Length: 252
Image 1 (cartoon, helix red, strand yellow):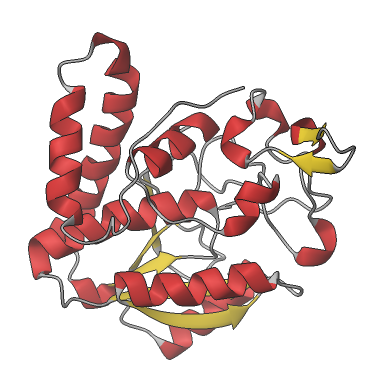
Image 2: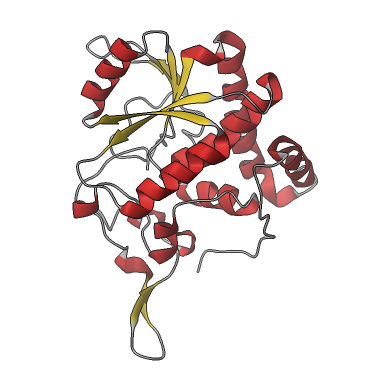
């Protein structure tokens, strides 16, 4: 199974910047981490570029409680605190599917408190939601998105790209576009970043509640004959990431 032992931090958001800097420095001496380090550095560089060009009140983070945007949020939070201080509030937009897991809703609420997110919730689909966001928050120019190049519905593979002409005009900032499934899980676990508890129940990609289930690739039967599922980070075949979904949505 695909996992490694990691230390646990019960409060990873406290002094998150200092912890990340120390963690990044520790990787610099390891020859087996070159690709991982490159992906971390690329992501933080893209975030720095966006924060250098756009004021905080013109930024927004697309957040739906999924693993990818959770990893991105932690990095963006570190950089925002570095520039604006711990009291800064980052606007976030949650584009909700028609049916939602209560565990996801609870995690989103907890995350908003943990990271000082100012959340706007809008119904799907994404294009209509972004149109509504443009009307209600016209000052927002750039949206951080946890898209990865392997997502089935990724809009553009570039880290920084403007929306197409027939969409509401936003800069799509996709700092982890080159990350793999295993990179996301390595980052979350290395830094003890809290994630939705459904991932520990065998869900590897989450969309609407009525079209998402545990991943059968993680299924096992315990000694008592009960069917159970390994946690998401133990998935070995990354091509099966969305095997538990009948409807694909990106950014999760």
